[in-house]
Amino acid sequence: MPATRADVARAAGVSPALVSYVLNDGPRPVSAQKRARVLQAIKDLGYRPNRIARSLRAARTNSIAMLMPDHVNPYYAELAEAVESEAFARDYMLMIGTDNNNRERARDFLRAFVDRHVDGLLLISAMSPPDVSIINDEQIPVVLLNPLHGSGFSSVTTDNRLGARVAVEHLLGHGRTRPICISGLPEIIAVQERESGWADALAAANVEPLREPTHGSFSRINGYEAMLDVLGDDIRPDAVFATSDAQAMGAILACEESDIRVGSDISVVSFDGTGAGYFNNPRLTAVNQDVPEIARQAVEVLLHRISDGGAVEHRVLEPQLRVGASCGCNPRSS
Image (cartoon, rainbow, N blue to C red; front, side):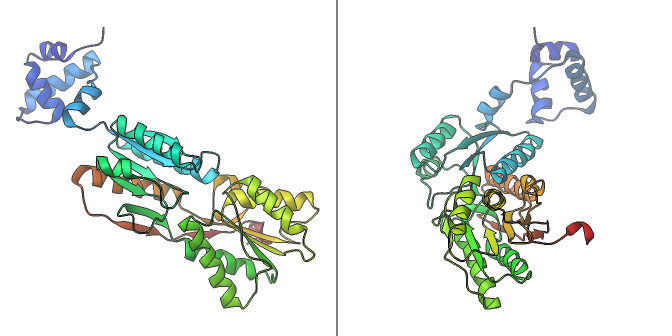
């Protein structure tokens, strides 16, 4: 049988209450000698405290939740993994739900998180605005991982407009004159910001797009189908800005199947900078969102909100362009 608190008390020659004081660092002081005896007994017996009971007494569960659109998009998958690592390092467990851009499914997940008494929520929403009334009713701290204006929640996001502008400026720097944009769902604020960056770069270079941005999900199939559609036009593009790595990878496959050489016949840049894009062939030139840093700061902000209910804050990270070969550069020679 597992060792109990009473077993530890007997082995250390102290009362069970004093063992509790050591484990909980209070509320009464414990002498250094007795503390050392208790800690040694814990080690010798392999005692493990009942975390559930401790959480109930503290009115916390040491668990947080993360709701995101899907786990197929490589950016969301990498972000979830990074958040899980950050939470675990701080003694928190992470629950993950995917709403598949479905409001009812999102509500069901939020109810499930509330029922499991999560201490806080990280939210990436493709719906604007998402239905967070359940979370608001329970006064659960929330940190957004994509822009959502006027929500009243804290946020940790990337500067989407700046990143898109930098990416498109690099694209046009290859002398391209017939650019297109394969974009995400238009109701997503991050998509709107990335399209603004696209427009900023085109206006500064006095370049007209070949057509208006095409909209769809952040997915390979959307990028693939959008690219096939535009390749059916009389005038083909010579440059593509995709608002996600997944869309760019789909667009590249469509080009290859149409005997269009990516990097020479057409330049492609994207937004995300995932590992999947790095190992794509050709390697994607992409705006790199610093996933580990986003995860670190998001968990940090959320735990501050949980512990002391601090003020709402908004952190915006500056993205960097990661140059690959999809744009026409040869990064190995640089």
